Length: 158
Length: 153
Image 1 (tube, rainbow over the protein chains, first blue to last red):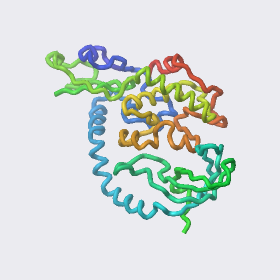
Image 2 (cartoon, rainbow over the protein chains, first blue to last red; image 1 turned 120 degrees about the horizontal axis):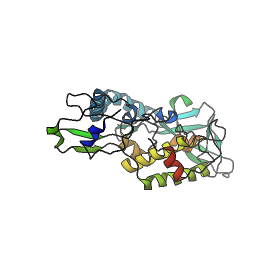
Image 3 (cartoon, helix red, strand yellow; image 1 turned 180 degrees about the vertical axis):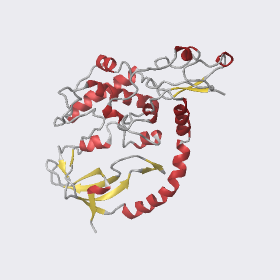
Image 4 (cartoon, rainbow over the protein chains, first blue to last red; image 1 turned 30 degrees about the vertical axis):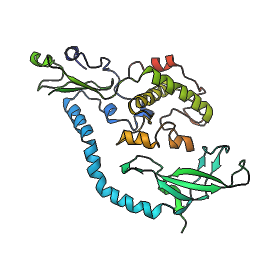
């Protein structure tokens, strides 16, 4: 509920402030931005939101320092490692090949996309694996392609 | 200095001056100029049209279908348009990000995101494979539908 009087004193505010549905539809509300998530009229909520969004960058800079050391340790160890896919997985993005089943195929780790220019990226399949395989419908020469995988979808080949 | 932020349409708020949420600020403060910072607002019609066309074309190309409930499709399309306006790239609107600008430049979550491109997994329920319980049989959505279905958002 909002009072019209509040809005009349600040005409520059965008007028369509709806009082009805404050939530996104459920499929999309799973991981929505903080601005849409807070639905209360509460002033303390607003201040908290303003503080948290302005201190977001501070928090992530501070919070990332201890984590980045362990990430930097992981990357040089794992990049270039040979791996084998251990879960049934079909990919559809390879040109001129409709579906490619990856289980059992071997490749090597090309990069970790979760860290980009020192910043943390929220990718859920952070390992970009390079494969070089013969595919049906692509002739005799092996095709090079990349697939993004999660840590638990492949095993290291020692 | 008093700063008021224009929050998205789903939020209602009041800047308090030690008063309850529903009263106007005292008269001597009303004459002050308020600095408005738009955090997010309605996406531009042009961007919505671009993302609408993109969604139709990509659904056709990938053999996926829109949700039986087209309001889901509409909200996602509007969310994509909003990110395109604010970040320059249509970042997935159904996720939370620490650093949106970095994510938009890096590109994993730029629609069509990597999970969609590689595995045809769209957790926004914008592009649904035919075997999905919620998949409709349409790969089209009109601007009127989008506007109608998102009228109070």
